[in-house]
Image 1 (tube, rainbow, N blue to C red):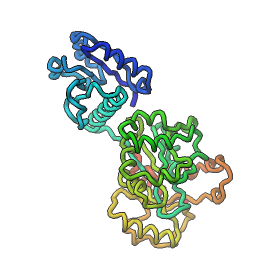
Image 2: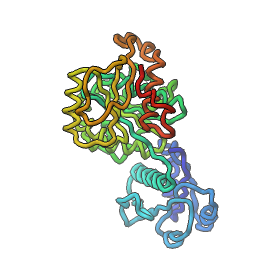
Image 3: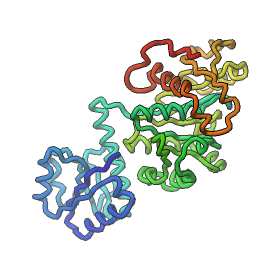
Image 4: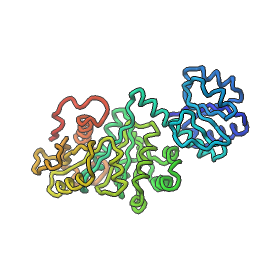
Length: 372
């Protein structure tokens, strides 16, 4: 979410000045620009300016005066008596004045992000797409597929967030950003989930070359096992509410841990990798049946050598795409080796286009569905 304007009309000038100073000195200064008003007539001029966008925060003194004024700004009431509105969809929400400024601004920012989502939905704007990469067994190439897809989308001008939910992730080998912040993320997820949104900007890592934002566990094995499915839902929702990303790509491990199952449930598309291996056929069939009906699954065969020998018909779905076997990846010795295959990277993008996973037109022909 880019910076938005926060217009404050408050009869308590000391409080308004303290609020403005806090915004400018904190992480909220990266998300909003604040303008203070002490006279209602000056704010009325802003309301009449059609180009004004953002949030209008007014004290209860001016509530009746401004309630029915038409404006592009989203109104919020700063109250000394009414506690925070529980529903962000409330027409004119209330914020309790005597809470911490951090809590107040976190709620204000979440309210504004929710309103932006409503507006974009009403105008038919596509929301953030959540894509998960999953498999029923290890060594299927989930991380390589997820990272190469993220790379291709980023290089095509899309804003991408890569999230690894594995217990042990090799992402730090391939992505070159600051690491070690996942433990702080887990802390906020467990102790103060309402603060997670603004904290994400500080906790995320960024690969400057690939232009990918990401989060990946480093050595938080026990903490990852303790994360609940509900906490994963909160995390995904917070990423979506940032309104910065066209795609969130989730790298899932081969397990049925609650955090993995919830990752699948919140996904718009699931790329379920399979291998032409009898053991993998069996595990895939059992897990897919146990997880119940999921209509957004795309079975993709990875490490395809040009001929399929096992029968996947019991899944009730066709293999939707074949990703090529890369002999050089049989034993990876350096990060450069992993990035060297342009064929796999291009096929990862063509897979997403063919399956309508990415926005826009599908691949121009069906030939990409069988990559040799």
